[in-house]
Amino acid sequence: MKPYHPPKLPVKLEPNKFYLELADASLELGNLNGLCQNLPNPSILIAPLLSKEATVSSKIEGTRSTVSDVLKFEATGIPKYDDTIEVSNYKRAMLMAIDVLKERKLDLSFIKTLHQILLERARGYQKRGKFREVQVWVGVKGAKIEEASYIPPEPFLVPEYMENLENYILSENQEHPLVKIAIIHYQFEAIHPFEDGNGRIGRLLIPLYLYWKKILNLPILYISGYFERYRDEYIDKLNYVDKTQNYEEWIKFFLISIRNQSKQTQTLIYKILKLKENVEEKIKKIKSPYKQEVINLMFSKPFFRRSDLKLEKMTSIRLLKKLVSFGILEELDIKGIKGKVYVFNELVKILSY
Image (cartoon, rainbow, N blue to C red; front, top):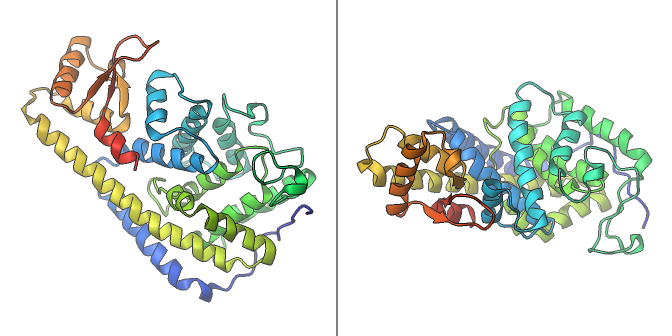
């Protein structure tokens, strides 16, 4: 097998082959965005939803860490597995992007910054933020290049391909943004510009592009759930473009994933909002002007320590004891950690399914 050279962008498409899927995807994505716009405090959804997306996207690459593992690491600094840090980095990269993309373009410099964060303290960290200078290939773990299922372009072609991709991302053409991000995702995976982390960066770009283009007010689309559930088909559709240069079947699959995951994300949001209502009802009897601060912390950080609650020490201790006595929080003693770690188990359960 020789290195594959994907066509430069833009490519000619036949929109009549996927217009129904595009209409359905646009409708459901609009419903998701409308839901977020009408929430009084949408920011509380960002951290939990990004934790789920980070975990599932990384799972596609073979990581073992669960949502619970990642959240516990973020509270304690103690990773259960080596890959727990990588999953947490994915979430950190997304949180950074939410702020940065308000002022900055989604260009190559930005993509390299994402990669730098993704690989911080992780495998392959020496090459983070740098395009590859060696030939890589895709195959089963440990496969030699002769056994590869896909060989991306040679390293000397990567800068040229990535400049073409950047021009396409930044161009103002007539393509619908959902079709455009489908092409961007395919092209990025075909180029495979980094030695490691290509799959996760490629999936990160999907909600971030939609956020940057103001299709989504927050990049909380839980897209990797569909790709993980239909992993073989996801890979087959990408490979089909390599073999045939027919993009329409991949675009149809991609748009179906957008439609389905927009619905899934809405369902997830409703579950989180219902849980919030239940908690607020349970703690009505607590007479404290600070209980809303505790609720906001619990939903943004389901594993946390008392010091995360920026209140006077005795005030926070009394509040947390009451929430434990109500069965809302659980206290954990973790070896190597001074003081209690509190966990909001009901939210962790929702994010784990």
